[in-house]
Image (cartoon, rainbow, N blue to C red):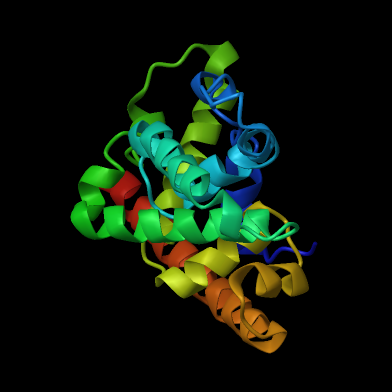
Amino acid sequence: MVRLPAISFVVTAAVQDEELPPALRSYPVAREDRRLASLFEEHAAFVARALRRLGIPDRDVDDGLQEVFLIAQSKLDVIEPGKERAFLLGIARRRASTLRRSLDRASRRSEHPLEWVETSTAAPDSNERAEQAHARAMLDQILDTFPPDLRTVFVLHELEELEIPEIAELLGIPVGTGASRLRRAREKFEVEAERMRVRLAREREE
């Protein structure tokens, strides 16, 4: 996948830190329900990343993941085989949309303010982690400026590395619509990344 320069500027470092949190790797699923357990094992990491990148703060990802799979558990009989990821993504998108409307944008990202790296006293051996945290904070702030439809396509393509036909199938939209949304999302990302670089440069000069 070819990324534009400004996208690589933020995304490449940020995605290196995108793993399923340790607390979620052993998330309690009703093991007697084999299909639910299989769904969790196969898709939990994807759902957790989607929740976070669609706007749910780190502290709420655990609860969001639980809600997604509780809903899935109640609807197992209507989830079509082969359509599980699309179904779970739909739940995650609705959950993220609801929560984002109820949270103030600044408070959502206060856990990782953009200035965190500059003001931290991280030891040399933790510099890489600090840079990743900083990249994640920058990416989060940029994504918070996106409308939901562009944000979803951008996240799925640039972070999950899905191709447009698969994204279109997951979202139930025409391939052309998916391609158009990605183009607009990448253009917006370029603008917002440049705006952020200019702002940070001015702040360092003050």
